Length: 149
Length: 149
Image (tube, rainbow over all chains, first blue to last red; front, side, top):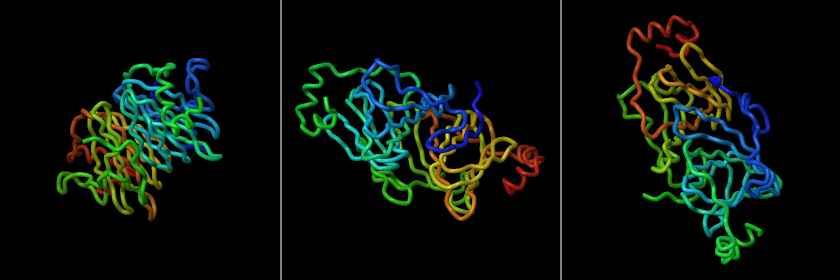
């Protein structure tokens, strides 16, 4: 399938010719109100660029994996948990998520949080936290408040 | 060198901890008024994400190479030459540049054109057009007007 040379931005952070996808299969992992659009998956490029959007009140899966994420906030503002620290995020900020660091994104306020995420095309599957991992994360009050579980 | 987990966007499309670089070595290739910032060059990710900005009246190098580019317009609007066609570009549009296609970016109007470019970390060097290539490009009047040489 060949991709058009230019795919215009339409409105509300959709692009012509880019399908709006489920973030993940329902029931495969905990998350709420997240969509996924794969902007670039050119087989001649060893990485992909995806756009994720989390609606107000939603959250991405709390997870970790061997592969790293390179993130640029494209829309709105929010917070990200990285390991034992919660960071504030604004539009166009850069986020580096190293391998095996627990992470989760949440929007702030009443607007969606949208972000680009560059990732190796060939990568491992995310891991979910077990009871021991959650207990360790909850040692930090700011983290416990953030993950809300 | 380890990168901070979050690097805030400051102002005027600069980021904390990201150096403003020359686009290329002066004299190595034709270009005008282009800057380069390498946003992500994580050795564990097989691609890099760079931000290029072309000032009004400027232009990127007219070039081609085996590697592909995946581009998202982050700021302003402009035009891109891809092969024998000039395309209009607006903020957030996506541009796919396959291998060995002549390409050049120019801003429109009085504002800079800024774009993200994802590219394989391991890639070949750009080729510049020779006299025969330029003659072939200039067959198309719109291309001749665009490249201006």
